[in-house]
Structures are given as structure tokens and as C-alpha cells.
Image (cartoon, rainbow, N blue to C red; front, side, top):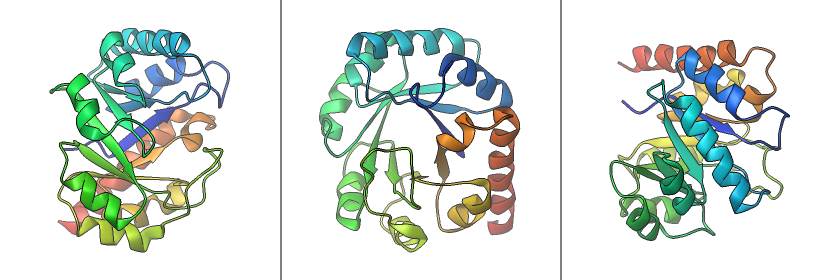
Length: 210
């Protein structure tokens, strides 16, 4: 089963991230974590990824590196996530071979169809809601598009963009297999509890849908 919570760690959001938060989330049961650092040098991102790999070693957590398949492989991470301006999925796959994962971002139906035809292990869809986690976010796609995307692929769908505890249930009901959360975890006074709350919502929705 695909992890229902996809924690994205951005070292630029809060001092002390990402290692401390990664350990806290892993102890809370989070199984999928991404390192997203779009502002640092390659050397720094590589060091951050190495540190996370070391911190997460005692846990069965899949660490994904954003944008950089080379850093993902060299650091010992277990996958890469590519956006529309990064390497194409199959080029990233040539670097991050199975069992590493390759995930891809999409923002419209055409992109979802294209992603479905690739070897991507999951497809991210968004932003579902307005988000402050990106400097130049793509236009909001909303829950209706998420529902439509669910009809276009059987690959796991990760919903991203402005998702909170208040909206998570509706996001899962619209067809998401997982919710990607950045700011709501990083800024929480109790990230472990917040993570467990997200996963509990997913379990509740799953039980209702049968």
C-alpha cells in the first residue's frame, strides 16, 4: 500500500530542519519523506541527503530527493521526484534504477496522461489549494481535477498544495492515495501528532470507501 502521508522537508522553512523533523516523523510512523531544497548548492543538498539517510537508517522510511537523481543515488536515498522543468521521467529512471522510485509532478490532464505512460512510480497532482510553500506556484487545480485525474491513471496519486487537516478528508475522498504536506508539518508545535492525525484521516476514509 502506498504511504498515505508524504512529508516534504524544506530546510529553508524552519531552522533545525530537516534531520530533527525527519526523525520525529519516522518515529510517528511516516513512511515516505522528501528532501526539497531549491535554494542551496549541490554540495549542501548532498550533505543534507546524506544526513537524512543516516538519521532514517533505523526506520523503514523511503527518502526521496527532489530534482536531483544524481544526489539521490550518491547519498543512498531511495528515489527522486522530478518536476516539469527537471529531467524527463525515463532519464531520471536511467539514474535511479528500481527499486528506487521516480515520482513526477503534473498540473493538467495532458501531463497526467503523459506521466501514466511512463515508468513513474507515482504521480503528484496539484496544487490542489493555494500554497505558500512555492515562490511561483502553478495555478490551483482543485478537487474536481484531482477526481478527474483519478480516472486517468491507476498509478498512486499524491495530492499536493495547501492541504491541511481540515481539507485532507475531502482530498482523500476525491481520489488521492497520499497527501503531500510541507508547511503544516514543519510549523506544527507537535509534528508527530499532526502526522498521526493525517494518517488517521486516511485510514478513516479508506474504511468508509471499503
